[in-house]
Image 1 (cartoon, one colour):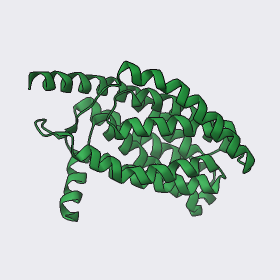
Image 2 (cartoon, rainbow, N blue to C red; image 1 turned 60 degrees about the vertical axis):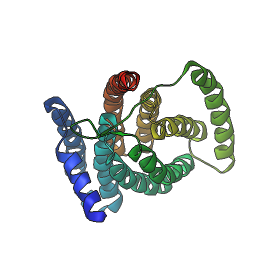
Image 3 (cartoon, helix red, strand yellow; image 1 turned 180 degrees about the horizontal axis):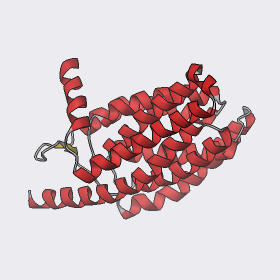
Image 4 (tube, helix red, strand yellow; image 1 turned 180 degrees about the vertical axis):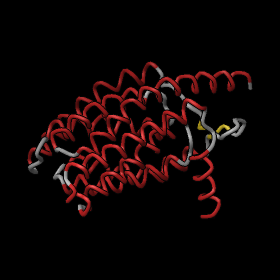
Length: 245
Protein backbone atom coordinates (compact mmCIF):
# COMPACT_ATOMS: atom_id res chain seq x y z
CA UNK A 1 0.00 0.00 0.00
CA UNK A 2 2.73 2.44 0.99
CA UNK A 3 4.69 1.53 -2.14
CA UNK A 4 1.67 2.28 -4.34
CA UNK A 5 1.07 5.62 -2.57
CA UNK A 6 4.74 6.52 -2.86
CA UNK A 7 4.72 5.76 -6.58
CA UNK A 8 1.64 7.92 -7.09
CA UNK A 9 3.18 10.83 -5.18
CA UNK A 10 6.35 10.56 -7.29
CA UNK A 11 4.49 10.15 -10.60
CA UNK A 12 2.12 13.06 -9.99
CA UNK A 13 5.00 15.33 -8.97
CA UNK A 14 7.05 14.63 -12.11
CA UNK A 15 4.35 14.07 -14.73
CA UNK A 16 0.96 15.31 -15.88
CA UNK A 17 2.03 18.95 -16.31
CA UNK A 18 1.95 21.14 -19.36
CA UNK A 19 5.18 22.96 -20.17
CA UNK A 20 3.86 26.24 -18.77
CA UNK A 21 2.64 24.55 -15.58
CA UNK A 22 6.04 22.93 -15.04
CA UNK A 23 7.76 26.29 -15.49
CA UNK A 24 5.25 27.89 -13.12
CA UNK A 25 5.89 25.29 -10.40
CA UNK A 26 9.67 25.54 -10.84
CA UNK A 27 9.45 29.33 -10.60
CA UNK A 28 7.48 29.25 -7.35
CA UNK A 29 9.93 26.77 -5.83
CA UNK A 30 12.83 28.95 -6.96
CA UNK A 31 11.34 31.88 -5.05
CA UNK A 32 11.35 29.79 -1.86
CA UNK A 33 15.00 28.83 -2.35
CA UNK A 34 16.05 32.39 -3.19
CA UNK A 35 14.39 33.70 -0.03
CA UNK A 36 16.12 31.03 2.04
CA UNK A 37 19.51 31.83 0.51
CA UNK A 38 18.91 35.55 1.12
CA UNK A 39 18.17 34.94 4.78
CA UNK A 40 21.39 32.97 5.22
CA UNK A 41 23.46 35.59 3.39
CA UNK A 42 21.99 38.40 5.49
CA UNK A 43 22.46 36.51 8.74
CA UNK A 44 24.66 33.36 8.60
CA UNK A 45 23.68 32.48 12.19
CA UNK A 46 20.26 31.47 10.84
CA UNK A 47 21.88 28.36 9.39
CA UNK A 48 21.57 26.87 12.86
CA UNK A 49 18.02 28.16 13.41
CA UNK A 50 15.62 25.23 13.20
CA UNK A 51 12.61 27.53 12.80
CA UNK A 52 14.05 28.98 9.60
CA UNK A 53 14.56 25.51 8.15
CA UNK A 54 11.08 24.45 9.24
CA UNK A 55 9.55 27.54 7.65
CA UNK A 56 11.41 26.92 4.39
CA UNK A 57 10.50 23.22 4.33
CA UNK A 58 6.87 24.09 4.94
CA UNK A 59 7.11 26.69 2.19
CA UNK A 60 8.36 24.19 -0.38
CA UNK A 61 5.73 21.60 0.58
CA UNK A 62 3.05 24.30 0.59
CA UNK A 63 3.95 25.44 -2.93
CA UNK A 64 3.86 21.89 -4.30
CA UNK A 65 0.56 21.23 -2.54
CA UNK A 66 -1.05 24.43 -3.80
CA UNK A 67 -0.04 23.87 -7.43
CA UNK A 68 -1.15 20.22 -7.33
CA UNK A 69 -4.51 21.24 -5.84
CA UNK A 70 -4.90 23.84 -8.59
CA UNK A 71 -4.29 21.03 -11.08
CA UNK A 72 -6.67 18.67 -9.24
CA UNK A 73 -4.13 16.00 -8.25
CA UNK A 74 -4.87 13.64 -5.37
CA UNK A 75 -1.28 13.54 -4.08
CA UNK A 76 -1.66 17.20 -3.09
CA UNK A 77 -2.89 15.82 0.25
CA UNK A 78 0.54 14.36 1.03
CA UNK A 79 2.31 17.69 0.53
CA UNK A 80 -0.51 19.50 2.29
CA UNK A 81 -0.12 17.37 5.40
CA UNK A 82 3.61 18.13 5.60
CA UNK A 83 2.93 21.85 5.15
CA UNK A 84 0.18 21.87 7.79
CA UNK A 85 2.41 20.19 10.38
CA UNK A 86 5.20 22.71 9.82
CA UNK A 87 2.81 25.67 9.80
CA UNK A 88 1.13 24.43 12.98
CA UNK A 89 4.50 24.41 14.73
CA UNK A 90 5.36 27.91 13.46
CA UNK A 91 1.99 29.28 14.57
CA UNK A 92 2.56 27.98 18.10
CA UNK A 93 6.03 29.55 18.06
CA UNK A 94 4.67 32.96 16.94
CA UNK A 95 1.71 32.80 19.38
CA UNK A 96 -0.94 32.94 16.63
CA UNK A 97 -3.67 30.96 18.38
CA UNK A 98 -6.19 31.27 15.57
CA UNK A 99 -3.66 29.74 13.17
CA UNK A 100 -3.01 26.93 15.66
CA UNK A 101 -6.71 26.05 15.78
CA UNK A 102 -7.04 26.42 12.04
CA UNK A 103 -4.17 24.09 11.21
CA UNK A 104 -5.39 21.59 13.76
CA UNK A 105 -8.65 21.59 11.79
CA UNK A 106 -6.75 21.30 8.50
CA UNK A 107 -4.82 18.32 9.82
CA UNK A 108 -8.09 16.60 10.70
CA UNK A 109 -9.66 17.27 7.31
CA UNK A 110 -6.67 15.98 5.34
CA UNK A 111 -7.84 12.39 5.74
CA UNK A 112 -11.49 13.26 5.11
CA UNK A 113 -10.62 15.20 1.98
CA UNK A 114 -8.36 12.47 0.66
CA UNK A 115 -11.17 9.90 0.87
CA UNK A 116 -13.70 12.31 -0.66
CA UNK A 117 -11.42 13.14 -3.58
CA UNK A 118 -10.37 9.53 -4.13
CA UNK A 119 -14.00 8.61 -4.76
CA UNK A 120 -14.45 11.32 -7.38
CA UNK A 121 -11.47 11.16 -9.72
CA UNK A 122 -11.72 11.42 -13.50
CA UNK A 123 -10.01 8.19 -14.52
CA UNK A 124 -10.45 9.04 -18.21
CA UNK A 125 -7.88 11.84 -18.01
CA UNK A 126 -4.25 11.06 -18.90
CA UNK A 127 -3.41 11.97 -15.29
CA UNK A 128 -6.35 11.26 -12.91
CA UNK A 129 -7.85 14.61 -11.85
CA UNK A 130 -10.63 15.33 -9.36
CA UNK A 131 -14.16 16.04 -10.57
CA UNK A 132 -14.70 19.76 -9.87
CA UNK A 133 -18.09 21.33 -9.01
CA UNK A 134 -19.56 24.83 -8.60
CA UNK A 135 -21.73 26.37 -5.88
CA UNK A 136 -25.45 26.85 -6.52
CA UNK A 137 -27.07 30.28 -6.04
CA UNK A 138 -28.72 29.39 -2.72
CA UNK A 139 -25.39 28.20 -1.32
CA UNK A 140 -23.84 31.56 -2.23
CA UNK A 141 -26.65 33.34 -0.35
CA UNK A 142 -25.61 31.67 2.93
CA UNK A 143 -21.89 32.37 2.68
CA UNK A 144 -21.65 36.11 3.64
CA UNK A 145 -23.75 35.70 6.79
CA UNK A 146 -21.82 32.64 7.91
CA UNK A 147 -18.46 34.36 7.33
CA UNK A 148 -19.46 37.44 9.37
CA UNK A 149 -20.79 35.43 12.33
CA UNK A 150 -17.75 33.14 12.48
CA UNK A 151 -15.31 36.07 12.18
CA UNK A 152 -16.81 38.10 15.01
CA UNK A 153 -17.14 35.06 17.27
CA UNK A 154 -13.57 33.88 16.70
CA UNK A 155 -12.15 37.40 17.03
CA UNK A 156 -13.79 37.90 20.41
CA UNK A 157 -12.63 34.49 21.63
CA UNK A 158 -9.03 35.05 20.52
CA UNK A 159 -8.97 38.47 22.16
CA UNK A 160 -9.91 36.86 25.46
CA UNK A 161 -7.04 34.33 25.29
CA UNK A 162 -4.44 36.98 24.42
CA UNK A 163 -3.78 36.52 20.70
CA UNK A 164 -1.41 39.18 19.34
CA UNK A 165 -3.65 39.97 16.34
CA UNK A 166 -7.11 38.63 17.31
CA UNK A 167 -9.36 39.99 14.56
CA UNK A 168 -6.79 39.72 11.75
CA UNK A 169 -5.99 36.23 13.00
CA UNK A 170 -9.69 35.28 13.15
CA UNK A 171 -10.42 36.80 9.74
CA UNK A 172 -7.77 34.61 8.16
CA UNK A 173 -9.13 31.62 10.08
CA UNK A 174 -12.71 32.29 8.99
CA UNK A 175 -11.93 32.48 5.28
CA UNK A 176 -9.52 29.55 5.55
CA UNK A 177 -12.17 27.34 7.16
CA UNK A 178 -14.61 28.26 4.39
CA UNK A 179 -12.03 27.66 1.67
CA UNK A 180 -10.98 24.33 3.17
CA UNK A 181 -14.54 23.03 3.36
CA UNK A 182 -15.14 24.01 -0.27
CA UNK A 183 -11.82 22.35 -1.14
CA UNK A 184 -12.87 19.06 0.45
CA UNK A 185 -16.24 19.32 -1.35
CA UNK A 186 -14.44 19.93 -4.68
CA UNK A 187 -16.00 23.37 -5.30
CA UNK A 188 -14.21 25.67 -7.75
CA UNK A 189 -15.26 28.73 -5.70
CA UNK A 190 -12.78 27.67 -3.02
CA UNK A 191 -10.19 29.67 -4.94
CA UNK A 192 -11.97 32.98 -4.38
CA UNK A 193 -11.64 32.34 -0.65
CA UNK A 194 -8.03 31.23 -1.00
CA UNK A 195 -7.19 34.49 -2.78
CA UNK A 196 -8.56 36.43 0.21
CA UNK A 197 -6.77 34.12 2.64
CA UNK A 198 -3.44 34.47 0.84
CA UNK A 199 -3.62 38.30 0.91
CA UNK A 200 -4.39 38.22 4.65
CA UNK A 201 -1.62 35.68 5.31
CA UNK A 202 0.95 37.87 3.56
CA UNK A 203 -0.05 40.77 5.84
CA UNK A 204 0.00 38.51 8.90
CA UNK A 205 3.51 37.18 8.27
CA UNK A 206 4.88 40.60 7.28
CA UNK A 207 3.87 41.71 10.77
CA UNK A 208 5.40 38.55 12.27
CA UNK A 209 8.62 39.14 10.30
CA UNK A 210 9.00 35.68 8.70
CA UNK A 211 10.45 35.99 5.13
CA UNK A 212 9.93 32.28 4.39
CA UNK A 213 6.21 32.46 5.12
CA UNK A 214 5.86 35.79 3.27
CA UNK A 215 7.37 34.16 0.18
CA UNK A 216 5.15 31.08 0.58
CA UNK A 217 1.88 32.99 0.79
CA UNK A 218 2.86 35.38 -2.00
CA UNK A 219 3.45 32.35 -4.24
CA UNK A 220 0.16 30.81 -3.11
CA UNK A 221 -1.65 34.04 -4.00
CA UNK A 222 -0.39 33.80 -7.58
CA UNK A 223 -1.29 30.11 -7.64
CA UNK A 224 -4.81 30.78 -6.32
CA UNK A 225 -5.55 32.95 -9.33
CA UNK A 226 -4.32 30.15 -11.61
CA UNK A 227 -6.32 27.62 -9.57
CA UNK A 228 -9.54 29.56 -9.94
CA UNK A 229 -9.18 29.81 -13.70
CA UNK A 230 -8.21 26.14 -14.07
CA UNK A 231 -10.98 24.81 -11.80
CA UNK A 232 -13.61 26.80 -13.66
CA UNK A 233 -12.54 24.96 -16.79
CA UNK A 234 -12.47 21.62 -14.95
CA UNK A 235 -15.97 22.18 -13.53
CA UNK A 236 -17.31 23.18 -16.94
CA UNK A 237 -15.76 20.14 -18.61
CA UNK A 238 -16.98 17.73 -15.94
CA UNK A 239 -20.51 19.21 -16.06
CA UNK A 240 -20.61 18.67 -19.82
CA UNK A 241 -19.35 15.12 -19.37
CA UNK A 242 -22.08 14.43 -16.77
CA UNK A 243 -24.79 15.73 -19.15
CA UNK A 244 -23.43 13.61 -22.00
CA UNK A 245 -23.47 10.52 -19.78
